[in-house]
Figure (cartoon, rainbow, N blue to C red):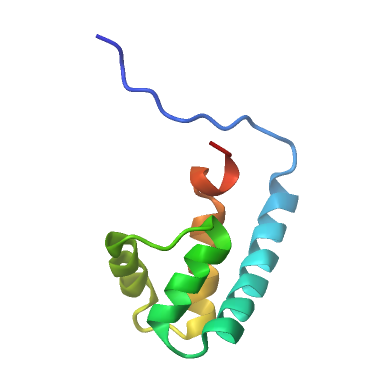
Length: 95
């Protein structure tokens, strides 16, 4: 029986630069989502997924994103959601 395999990312020497880019990029991403989707959280979540992953969110992803965004200002919540999506294997690797 084979052990389960996990995706592996190779290490690089650019962690600080990547972190700054992620933080800056997530704030810019959030501003753009708000601009395009206006104040509707459902539209913001849909737009964020389409912009970051080129697909609509699943019902489970919408539920999770709404829970994450609860009680937060839109830009702050969308920046956090952007950071999560920017670090998904789906965002980083082409299939």
